[in-house]
Length: 457
Image (cartoon, rainbow, N blue to C red; front, side):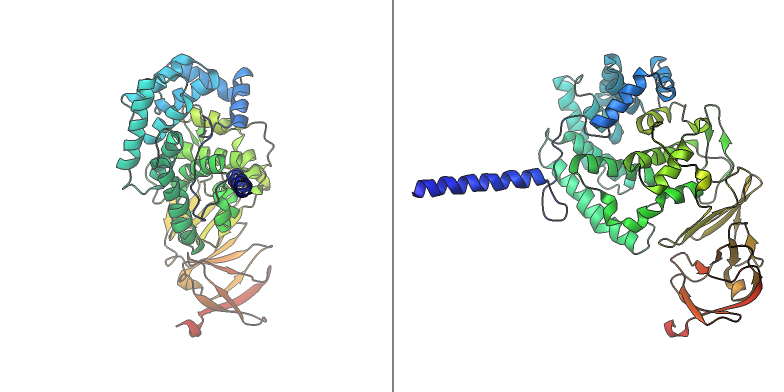
């Protein structure tokens, strides 16, 4: 009888363990995250790899451009990424061997090394696999002081590629990225309105989101819904209206602090790649559908040696989208205190951006930095009316049509009492960027007085 009860207990324990294993790890509950799936584990899941192979068979525009560069031996700025992707899709062994030789030889970029290790397992010799695994371990350890989003992304990709080849290091890296960095640091900062993620962080962040969901079945967005809610629309409006004609394709130029003499085309390419990967991540979000309509204009298809691999990897031309002409022309990001306004979707549009304490206006092909404390006249962009700083504490204004009204350059996170002619006293707060959204009568001149709530002084 004792033996029977012992056997029953053993079977019940084994069953419980099996159920827990099937349920998968739950972040934040002390579970150990593991990437135990077959290679490739990074980006090239079964559905995406099937899509890419179908694109090559159909001789699609994006495949033909990528194939033209690779078959023509064009010097690729990211040779490991490009050759490994070409091998994974086409099965061209020469490309895989080229990627492997680069990775065990001069290759130093941890992200690309991880992609080669993950995507080219079939062509790596035992010695190459051992050498590259050791190189990835060193890369994780040596890059530890770098806390940029791109470095964190690269360490995560290396850890996912290494899982099952070495013990301890991948699991500790998963914990650092998912639980310590994202859940412990980034999510609380985003919730408090601190802009800890920049425009240039978006592409590496999307790579993190993809690899975490694909390997751990976790959607990191769920912990920061406020940040992701309007991200797609904000992306659309955070470009200057005029496009840049380069030799390989046209570029949309993302907003930048203190723009210099010329656009950074690599930065522009990565901004587009970020949007392509956003659509791939969640095709049903409203912002993604507008982005898809925005992205499928072939004039902006990345054809150069840097951008073509990203374009081919992430684009899905069969995904339906919405015309971006239906997207909002005004976005007020009250979480971080940003405001973007376009007068229209035409390249000749006037554009205004208030972000990171900087005010820019784009008009007639050039960007102008403005100081809101120096501006005295309201700016009507036809879609929103903008009032400036201390000059708007007492004013008269006529707001046409149904335009929203924003005051920029006020003190951040302050309560203001708002007096409008013939209306009751109202109260509103500025956001972290010092923007105050006003609800004013339209098509009639009204007097407005703003004053800080004395109760907060």
